[in-house]
Length: 452
Image (tube, rainbow, N blue to C red; front, side, top):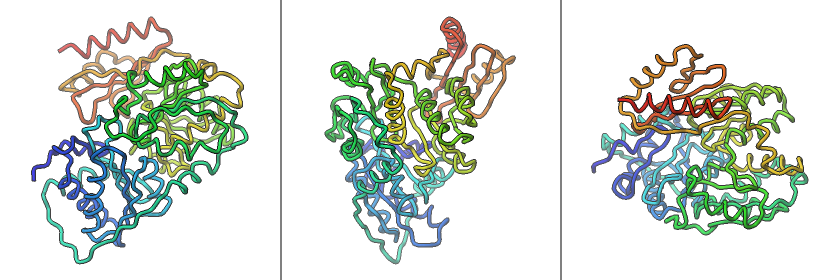
């Protein structure tokens, strides 16, 4: 059996079905995963398995479960589940680990696996994927004296109770909301979570369809937001919300159908948290606007800058007792949700903020648009480290930070350039105090990066 080593990525395992991810590969990954966990835990393992609604997910899930059982470990099969549901199940039911069968926001021909240990601690390239990769590629055979067993468990009721446990329902006004789940698995959660609230919900593409016939489940791509933008204007909604394919990312739009940057959403949520619990630590990724740090300080919080990547963020949150973290990609993490992705925690914090303010969502957002931000720009670069050194030499007079690629701060602007973990790409973000300066620096850096 030939296995493409490139399916083992920085934070998960992902590839094209059935060429790269298929029954045989899935089975071998499951057995390698059990072997990896068994070395760290002497007790018999009980692992959770969930899946999204891609056409290949039922078959791959079946082979993952078979591989775990044949390795002598037990399985709690939760069936259709978002990735946050899988994280919840592993931590809440105190299981040994788990696998979500999903390729997140990728096109329908892809599939893959997200792996976690006990307490839903993520397994990344550094913390286990590389070791699992070596086991799989070695084509190792495993012998097991005793088989495990499978238990099927419906968790949606427990999950909804968990999500709504600390929501102040009386503070929520009857807002009109457009929600787009892009025919993805997040569609199974919307009604049971929101049916108890006085919200008028227009749910786009709620029917599960692993072909994603209306648009790809990636809300970071502007083309995939055309339908939700139209619906916001048609229904005169107060806001819109779009989820990705496995339900761990959430993107907000205001009543004008404008996308709200994730760092501003993070600030709004952080301020609400700090109003109740001043002095808490708030983590933000280094691509975020400077307004994030400024507003967290104003709210009597402790702002901490982080490198990009959920495994690094979750690990640091646990070590330093950080209550909340945000990434520019639309991932949000909350201590009260097992330090995992918490899209509905953020959703309800934003809903409460709008309800209490009596203002339009756009008004709240515009208060934080102090700077001009480029968003992330990708450049194809083969020798990424050489190019970063060249950039550092050119801009040597600024304040340097190396926590993720290179960030250099100046008085009126800053930039971050960091290498992709999986592709020959450099990712650039620039922020400036005015639009003219932003465009000038974008042109200057782009020219430098593209020069051979």
